[in-house]
Length: 371
Image: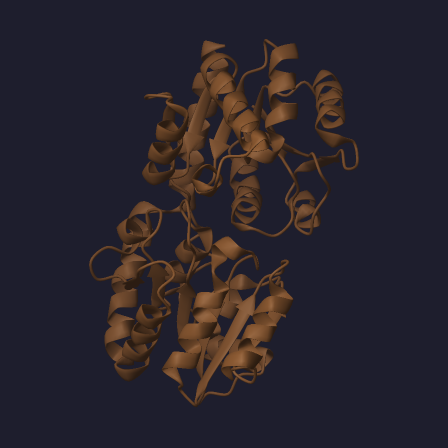
């Protein structure tokens, strides 16, 4: 089967990282993979190509221009199926679906955050388009978690029209490292063995709530703590100013993007995800698969992922709760490691990449068969 993914870009992010990680297993199972980037190529495009995917870019043409180029591409390469990810590609995906009536189109919802925001004309129009497409154009619409499904179905009154496939993680790439790998990873990051290393990974945007982590670090006040934040985004300068204002500018270090998340996680003593909204966060799955103690906020399916004893949970926006959890981990680290081992077991059982790929292949096969 030839699958054509339609995405805004292949810039670094949870959805994009997971998509790239599925390329090799999909090809190994006899599929062809192409990716159409509607707004630009992105940092992960080279990696996707090296794994065997064909990359096509339509940057600078706007939504309707991207739709025209997508249709032309489909007529040329003849994919068996289109799979759109993120609402940023709704317009080209819907237009292509209307024109290419014999080619099935599936769509995945990666987050509910957009539907929780105040209503604007643009957001209302996008909601109307998604509702129309889900009922009349898409072969299937899939959410990454039950929470996302419920949020979107309630917001758009879609009933049972959306199904769920939870994200997965490559358990070979993200696994507990040896003592030597941990030492090498920490040395590469410039972190001493005496430091208590806290890592957070995510785009520097308001919904990821890195400001909550900064305040929590100031409250915890551990002199041996180092905090490395990996990711880029418009919040960088504001977060740096906040660090200076609360006196942790020498503790919190914004490192930008990383090409080796697995190595970063093996170096970490603790992973913190302070988001205000999530679907099935890929970075949380990666951290837990690596065996790192985790602190997450009670959003999306985070509580379901960590279970009763696989990590620490705090209310969204509650810096005091995050600070208390940081102190609890650093005070009794052996207990935190026991919880991390339990958490990794949950990931192995429920969130493996093989399961994720098989689930999507079943969706693709049914969509093609029933078209």
